[in-house]
Image 1 (cartoon, one colour):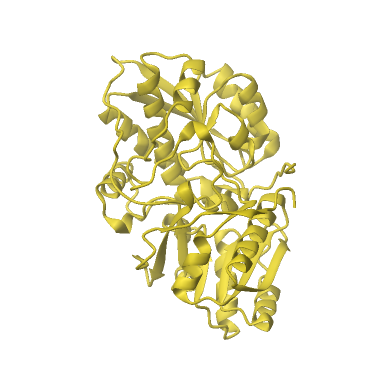
Image 2 (tube, rainbow, N blue to C red):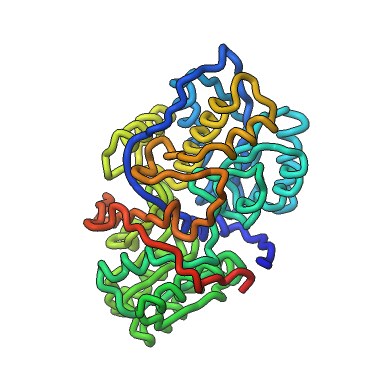
Length: 407
C-alpha cells in the first residue's frame, strides 16, 4: 500500500507524467445556449508549490478562450491552497458549498488533503495528478495526462539515454514517498536496460539547495548522465556543480523547468540550464503543429509570450477536458452526469497536444512516463529550446517487474 505524502514539491516530481504529437480530432461542436459554467481553480498561488503551480491560472484563462470557441462560457473562481495541507480542504469546501462550482480544476501539490471529501461529495475534479494515488482510484478525478504512477517503470527514458550516449547514470530525489518511488523506478529501469546506475539518492532533504555533496558523490561514481527529481532551482544548481567538478555529462534530464519555470528558478538558471534536456508530457511548442500554434495563440491572449510552463499546459487542458465532458453530458448536467460523461471519454487527444496518441480517460491506466509511455525532449541551447532528433517523441513500454509502491 502506498503511503500518503504531504510535501509541496510532489508537484515537481510528477512532471514525470509525460507524452506524444498532432492536431485535435475530437473538438466539441455543440454550445450551451448561453449557460455559464462556474469552476473552481484550486492551486498553489503562494507557498513552496507556487514556483511550479502558480502559473496554472493563466492556463485556465487561456483554456476559457478555447471553450468559448465551442460555445461554452466558463467562469473561474481561484482558491489559493498556500501549498498548505491544512488550508486546502477549507478552500475546496468553500468553492463547492459557497461558490457552488460545478467542478474543480486542481493543480496543486496538496490536493490529496481535499480529495477524500471531494470524492465523498461527488465533485468532478480535473487537473494534474501530481500529489498522490487518488487520481488512479477515485472515479471523480480526471487528469488530461492520465493518472501518474512514478512507482512503475517504463523503457521510455532508457531509449533516450541510449540515444544520447549515457552509460553511467546518477539519480537524485527528495526524501518523501513519491519522489523516492520515482527515483528508484528510474534507477531500476536503467538497470533493466543494462545502463549502470553509479549513484542513487532518495534522501535529499526537501527544500535543500546544498547540492555540492551530490555533485562530489556523482563525480566519484563516474556518472555521465543525471536525472533530477528535484525542484528546478535545486536541479539546475546540481548540474552547475557537476560542471564545476569537471563532470562531463552526456545528458542531464529534468522534468520541471521548461518554459517560464526556468525564469523562476533564479538569475543564473539560463546559464545552468544551457544544454539540459527537458522531458515533456505534451507536444513542445517548438514542434509548431496546428495544436501547439493554437495553444500559444490562446496563451498570448492572456499575456503569456514565453514558452508555456507545464502548469499552464495542465490548466489549459483541464478546461479542454471539461468541455469534452460537458459536450458528452448534454445541456446543464449535474455533477454526477459530468462524472459519468468524463469516464466515458475513450479517445482524448488533449486539444491535439497528444499528437498521434490518445487517452482512455475512464480506464485510469497508470502513466509512469506519460500517456502510452511517450515523452518529448527539448534541449535548451542558449535562450531557446530545440527539439531532439529522434525524440519527437520517444515511446516505450511498461516494465512489469518494476513496482516501488510504498518503498
